Image (cartoon, rainbow, N blue to C red; front, side, top):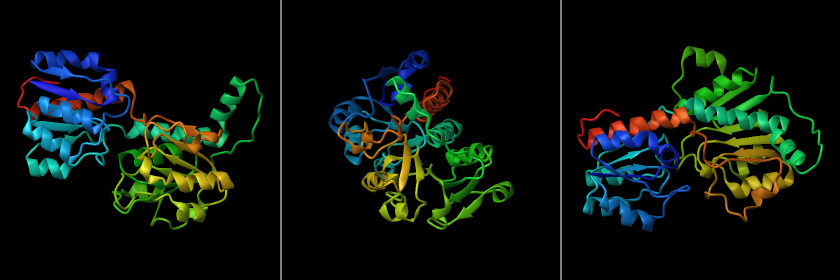
Length: 314
């Protein structure tokens, strides 16, 4: 049997997992992946393997149909987000598939918090200026007493809220499907977006990408925000309308942004976002810690082996 892996974090630690596959008699196909493989590359590879551990690739119906016509028996979406995978097509084609939920709440939340801190104290901007030979001293913002509009209250959102609450920040949560406890009700305010958005000093997105959340942060919602708002997105790029964000940055309505994800990844070299020094950019890398990758990868392998009816323990 063969299993294709196209998830960059898992590929980065692949040496740790290869013995598990070898014990099961499985050959691992591990192409070089920066972010995703193209549809044409996947159309060539997927039909030749029995299993596919998917990263952020656009796993379309066309690819799954090609896989079904070949050897493909099962797939696992590595990580939490599933917006890039056509689960409906898998169901119709009889291809078993699952993701690895509840793996990275704390990991992605710490990235969100690091962006909040970096934007508040402009530490990333100062670092760049010092490296350039300058000695700048911009006035920062204290976190205590300031308000965060937190969009999304799943595993990542709950961890983010908990961490930011430790800085004595006020947390307004926007998530119509939030599962909340009595302690959550006491600690945070739950509102309907965009209710009271104008009170937020930071807007932090940790929600899933759905038709309802695509471009939730847009020209209209940004205009409603407080002047000088700081925006953080650690969920999916299309949550933020980058054209609207650019206009906000140019006008000064938006002070700065911390973006781990973008509408187009990698971020194009001609993106105007690169012109704003106070912004912080990532590489869709929020979940990538040694421990987090290890947890999710073992879960992905376990699920794949169950689908392929392999008795080796991952």
